[in-house]
Each structure stands twice: as C-alpha cells, then as structure tokens.
Image 1 (tube, rainbow, N blue to C red):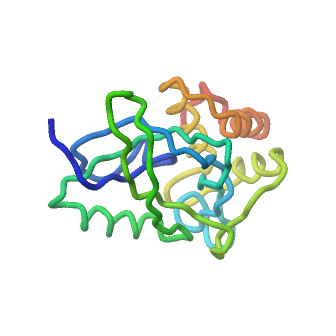
Image 2 (spheres, helix red, strand yellow):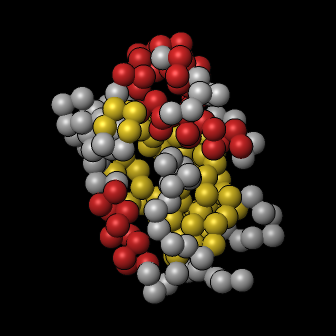
Length: 187
C-alpha cells in the first residue's frame, strides 16, 4: 500500500468531490472542532451579492468532526495544494492539525485543514437554524443550488454512519422550506 507524508482533511464538499488525486483515503476524527454552516460562499453556492452558506469548522472543546483524510502523492503535493487554495479562496486558510484515524491500528495523522474563521469578509457566522435553512434553500451559485450542497453532505454522512445534528437539522428545516431539498429528493 502506498504511504503518504502529506495529508488533507475533508469535512465538506471534499468528502464527495475531492477533485484531486490521492494515494490513500482514511476516515478520521478532528478533535476540538465542529462542522458548522457559518461560511459564506460567494463563488460556488452563491454569488458575491447573495452568498450561500457552506461549512467551516469552529473550535469546540467537546467537538469531534468526522471526515476523510486524503494522503497525497508526494510528487503532486504542491499542485494539489495550489488547486485547493484556489477552490477554497473565499475566506479559507490552511491550518495543520492532528487527526485520529478510526482504524485503531493507525497512528495519528498530521493534516492540512482548510478553515474559515470569523475574521474573513465572507464569514456569515451563527444564526437561528430556521434562518440558516431558509438562506440555504434560497441560494444558488455557479456550482449549483446551495440546498444541493447541504443534501449531498447529509447523504454522505448518513451513508458512512455519521450523525451530525447540525447538518441533519438544517436538512430537515430546508426540506420544509423547499420540498425538493428532502433527503430522498434528487436534483
């Protein structure tokens, strides 16, 4: 099996559409962080004048964010990170953090994680869940409807046996706003 010395942690759209080559994919937990729909998306799931909402990570002492660690081919590392920097350009920055693989036989992994914090101009922050769901149900951008992003994230988590009440709660509320956002609906 190939081994990688460089890892990227996916917790949002990278889960179902990494968009880059990798040599390993490892389910892992990121301790101390929670996934939240607090970041504005003026370039993918919204527009500059009407940004959508996508996930970022927020510090949470009790948090454990499930995701996938992608092991990069060392020869492609710089190209992959350059592409991810372009993809995550609207407010995200790179941090490094230790991940805990779900396979207890694996050692912890040090990974690059893209995080949008409150200091970036596209950060939308916390809002009542009903307002966030309404926002998501009504937004769209070049990558498609914002509700599709929410639905795909929820479906991916469900398929992997991961419960994320923030995501699933927004999915239920968005379905009430927009019936085609229901978990069984297809875009």
